[in-house]
Length: 134
Ligand code: HEM
Image (cartoon, protein in one colour):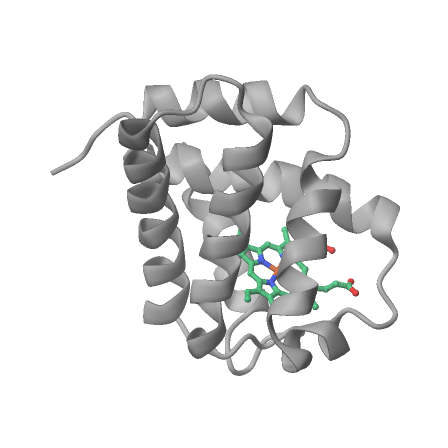
């Protein structure tokens, strides 16, 4: 079943309009596993925060079934694949989902249990897509 995840897109809008949302997400992600922390040792955070903001937007559009973002989605998956420039072991993706869900929980003033479930479903679609292309 394809859902539009319009409520998730709106929630993402509310989160990104607030200062510190993506920074908080990375703060949570980096302490979740040492392997992850090491991967980000020489990261330019200004660039990375911007790239991820866009990346999540692409991922949510993709999760809602739109194929206009197939290309950038493929590029992100390929970058994080075994042979990509930044390989990410699929075992690590649950940390990514959990960190983002926690950040959303903290930043969206209109968060509800249903919205959290929809967020979880959209993010699972994203990481399943990456895992399938690992
Ligand atoms: C546990 C999961 C993940 C880890 C450990 C991870 C790790 C990384 C690392 C180390 C970089 C490079 C940072 C640098 O330049 O120093 C990166 C870049 C990036 N990642 Fe991930 N990533 C994960 C999941 C994802 C997911 C699910 C998405 C999709 C939304 C994503 C989107 C991106 C984007 C857009 C970039 C920036 C590429 C650019 O520089 O243009 N990542 N990631």
